[in-house]
Image 1 (cartoon, rainbow, N blue to C red):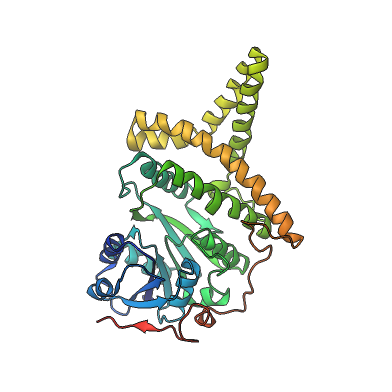
Image 2: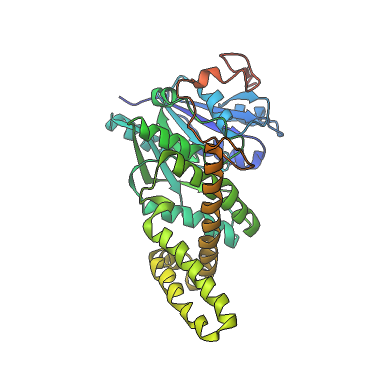
Length: 364
């Protein structure tokens, strides 16, 4: 029997992207519903939502996508919650594949996909960032311990059982990875299926990429890894990636030492060669997707990412250790997981809508 889908799109601003996202999700299959969680929205999305048969839940804020998704989830009736970012374009066919997966695999609790090979923005860093995401998810197909809310689905009963997204993430970050860790810890089955491919519209700049990778990904993810003791050889945490971080730092150290003793500079070529060798499949992917010139430009950017990933790991570890000692510094996550007994339906009061039942704005 096909499960019904409740599709939730958190939204703050950017009607042009939202329209493409909603258009990609329609027409809906019978029994499915589409919800826009307007999180302190600065752009009025009511008319746009009505055009695509979506209802709008208004949330005083912005409170962040964790709250927005939780409040929307509390108002749903579907068997499966499907989370789609407002700058992501999926399709009814992809939604159909999600429904079939859950119908055919009763033990499957959650599934998430990947970005496709054709990002909406044509700039180098947008292409690099999105293709990198695509590569990592493609090469990690199968059982997973994390979750991705850019385009991911979870059975409603399991989502409620673990308390939904952790609302202590007050801005877009890795609240979805945290949810995946808690689902896994509770014994639920998660699948990464990169054939569930969606288009990402976001424009990335170099500065925005580095800032996001460090502050929104690297530092908080390190804290989650330590909180949940998740050191699996998967996604961005593969052994070769960890070795590459060490190799990148050795390259820099030998290069600096070479300023004092020039022969030492030659030693920098050894770890550099290893870093490139460990990333050979990654660079080959870019070569096949965008050609030689693009792939050559990826190498220094990737090398830089190893360096700031090392910084992120050190900073995240220190913040975690201090939080465990009840010293909470800027950027620190709570040292312990949220209370799983708290249900998303109880979150609406703190989100600025009616207790127990979010205020649903008129579609007309």
